[in-house]
Length: 145
Image 1 (cartoon, rainbow, N blue to C red):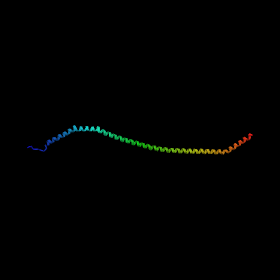
Image 2 (image 1 turned 90 degrees about the vertical axis):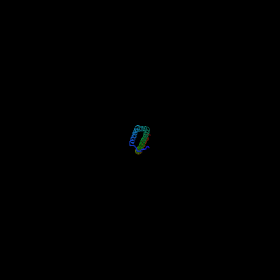
Image 3 (image 1 turned 45 degrees about the horizontal axis):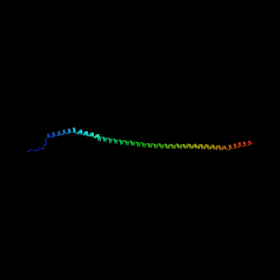
Image 4 (image 1 turned 180 degrees about the horizontal axis):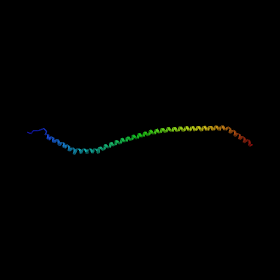
C-alpha cells in the first residue's frame, strides 16, 4: 500500500521559496510599482489639484483677513489722528478767537477812551466857543444898526 510521507523535502521547499520570491519580485516590478505610480499620479492630478485648490483658497482667505485687519487698523489710526488734529485745530481756533476778541476789546476801549477824551476836550472848549460866538454876534448886531 502506498504510504503518505508528510516530511517536507528541503530541496523542494527551497526551490518553491525561491520561485515564490522571484515571482514576488517580478510581480512587484512589472505590475505593482507601475500601478502604484499610475495611481499616485492620478491622485495627484485629481485629488491633489483639489487639495492644492483648497490650500490656495485657505491662503487667500488668510491674506484677505490680514489685508482687512490692516485696513481696519489704518482706518482706526487715521480716525484717531484726525480726532487729534481736529482737537488741536479747535483749541488753536479758540486761542485765535480769544486773542482776536481781546485785541478787538482793547481797540474798542482805546477808541472809546479817545472819543471820550475828545468829547471832554470839545466840551471844555464849548464855553469859550459860546462866549466867542456871543461876542461876535453881539458885535455884528451892534455894528449893524
